[in-house]
Image (cartoon, rainbow, N blue to C red):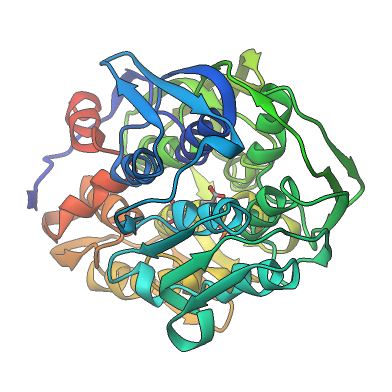
Length: 425
Ligand code: SPQ
């Protein structure tokens, strides 16, 4: 795909698609509930469609209209042994959270994903699940897909997460919900808490005491209505686009503002960006309007507890930092190495091709600005977020950007290019 913008400026209002993390979880809790769940503003990206497909193979009726997804919940006991392999596509969230659900169901299932999923570590989930009594086998001792799961009666656990990961936490929570008694999960740093919020939204309960999360087993859920806020991880691309493109102002309505996800807003403020955030309403999750204008930016340091609150935004923050005066240092972000690609390497390599002054470190990167970027040939490497970073970079390059494998973007933001065209005048 050739991207050629001639001195663009960005202007207008959009509502980015529904939050990916919340969309996945709404299908999961809808399926595990008794009765009907109606989901509005669901993300019809490929990852969430994989979650729908897996639950259909487990016997759950899920209807789709243009406006809504309706899940006819079966409750925990209504899930059926699938006669086909569950294909989780490119989705780490689907793979890991479903392991927690399937580990305690009384049947056998087999899970596979795409080439990228085949390289992502699953032992971070299979190890605690095995400690709860799960029987999961997979390539390299259960470290990688394909995985075979024989559901078992699960025991409670007290588990200290070795990495700050919402997916590991959520998988253990799903397993703990099926155990007899109380489990405790200890987080090294707070990670996104959509699973916990949704337990309450579907009529269950869960407690947090400091960094300890306490889950009671044997809970039954009741179907409900869910509104999925706009995904701040998708909004991030147009926040950065507006900040780095001359004469721009972009308004992002109905965007999720859950505190475990708003690290990027903190970074914008630290870097001196022209940003305003207005909270509008909340439906289980906080929601609001983010407005960003062309900004004069300064470099910053990013590390520590903020990392899980912006982990998926680091690639686009790297582009932002190329347009800031001075040095930006990103630390403690080694988790980026086990995403859809090694996102430290892919973002550094691809931005370098456009002339950025950026280098990889063991746990992050160092970016020196402000650089004039040039056109060139780059690739998403099959990673949706890397593809979007490169497309946004094309707004400020001297010359054309040729983006290979732009299709990957449909994983989380199928309307991305429509929105880009709409905003870039
Ligand atoms: O689902 P997947 O493929 O893991 O997606 C990513 C993404 O960039 O969209 C990560 F590659 O988001 C994860 C996120 O990084 C989604 C997620 C969740 O919904 O719980 C949590 C984060 O992962 P982790 O491993 O830190 O828990």
